[in-house]
Image (cartoon, rainbow, N blue to C red; front, side):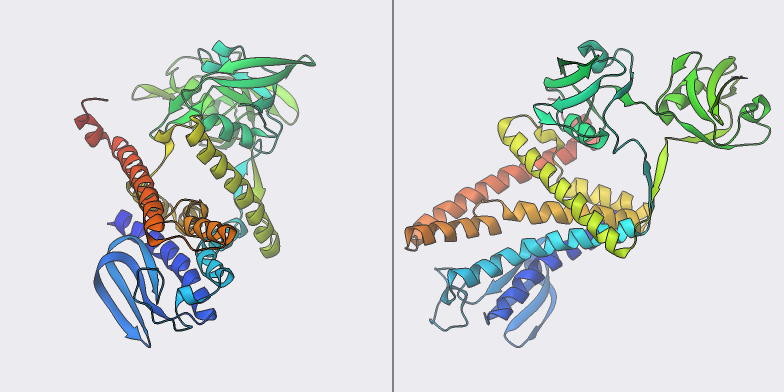
Length: 438
């Protein structure tokens, strides 16, 4: 129930804001709006005010604003309040405002999220210098070594760990050329990321030069008896370096009732601590909570808006590169998500709280705004493209030509929907079990 309500809320808000952009722009240039609908199909509830019917319809996967004289085949009287009676510049304003509203909403929502403050991994904005390489990982097989400074991934410069993770994460199962600097000399490596998780995110098994910290120690537990203290930074277990919190957790977990040596840094000094994990089921526990190295961000309102605009700009570039990768074959279509996946994420985010839900909405709103700007007939960007081509040709295309263009765009969207829904279904275990061909 929470999942469905969260999904309805997310889609409802995003679609309402998008269509509100078209509606307000149309009213501003005095175009008569016949219908403002959230959803498609039969009307569920609604009312009429003036010339406009406002309603909620049965299929909640979109919405539309119907304007008088919107299409060439619509009945037209030639009145100045019809859409096609307006200049191309005025029609462009109406078409562009839907995506613009979604992009603006993404900035506002993310600014609200950032203004709440958050703990983020401290290494994300650091140079991508390899601190550790996982054994038997794609990175080890490709020849990565600690100390390597990654310069480019697939020919594109990466300036920090966040950009590196994105570049690798969007290319699972594909041979990726990587340039690194090792001992002041550039070297070219080729690595094929493994696909991890239900969204098949690419991972190669390299980690930054960071270490997990002890957040708290429970009294009477093995860690307390051994002398571990909150704030200790664990650098190694039995001489093997650990970079992330999960590495430390795994190392402790596989040694129940076996003495292990933790190398920790405390007040600038290195201390070896002997501890024997107690057995809990099949794994070892020592009674600590741990985290990766974090930093706190808590911007003011104006700084939050600026940071939001910057991050949305970066995300937009990533989305466009991902779309380009789909065309070139660099990015796997398996990473695309459809309505079922969005519903699942909406439910999970709603359970985590409104901050998480707003962050998800910001991401989807950005995607929706950019998607609608693509030059694909049926989408807003496609209509703008057709109008631009008509302007360049100095004549309007025939209804038959426009119908063919729109039908081609419709087929492309159907193909996209089939792909994303198939991806969503494969992420549901019991459905995937029925797919004998996988």
